[in-house]
Image 1 (tube, rainbow, N blue to C red):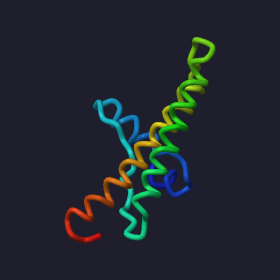
Image 2: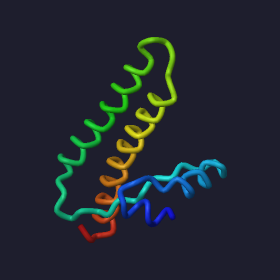
Image 3: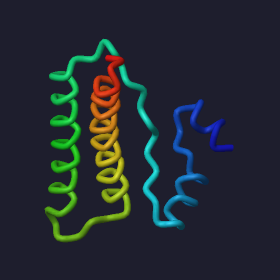
Length: 99
């Protein structure tokens, strides 16, 4: 079911719930793009992080974070983590001598 959902661009809820139950955070591992610019990676990290911070700020504005707002902030955090992971994968390839 999760594989079907992923192919359809939907979240893999079963594996996400299992990971959360075990105290883990699940994020899809990015593939290192050898053509990617390190500057572009830093810009993506900055943008995704700013989106998460902005979403949290908006959610906290009235003093109460709703479930919908929490979902939005968490999605933005996952996007920021994915941006960090993509740059990390590229740097790992460089470290291994296979840029």
